[in-house]
Length: 202
Image 1 (cartoon, rainbow, N blue to C red):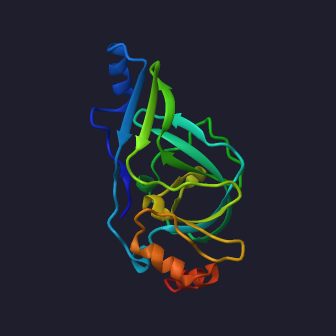
Image 2: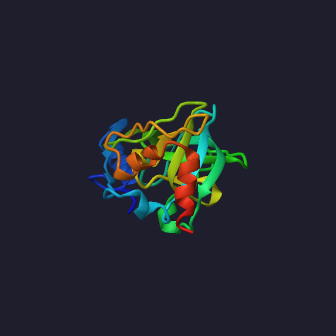
């Protein structure tokens, strides 16, 4: 289970930026492919990942580079946690960069891709895989990892996020190729039913 960013075709982000600068290039465009998860059902993931509700804040996204990738960090208000098993450090991945400032009730969701200046080169990175999008004020159900420090890992890419209405209605999902568990969760119709199904594991 889970997904991670596969290395670019020709080395790390910093190495490629240095190579581009040596060639006299002022800009560089990179595409990155995520290692995809296998399709899974609700019963196979419900005890392995966290389920939580969050609302997109008005804070603008922040783009930041690490030695390998560029991420665009989105800030959301954490409303409630429905289920949160122990999550390993390996699953949680990268720390929140210092340029992302969170309040105690906020979380940060990194989406692969963005723009940054690396070693003097303007780098644009895009993900070749579908990723979720967020709208200010919209409420979302997350299926993933709620990690220390407020960072979030989305092991199922765009299938990790499902819209939730103010009355608790689940759906729709905007996933391009939704996993089987997405249809099952949307089929529960209400958060109350999802919470009941999650309690069945205990």
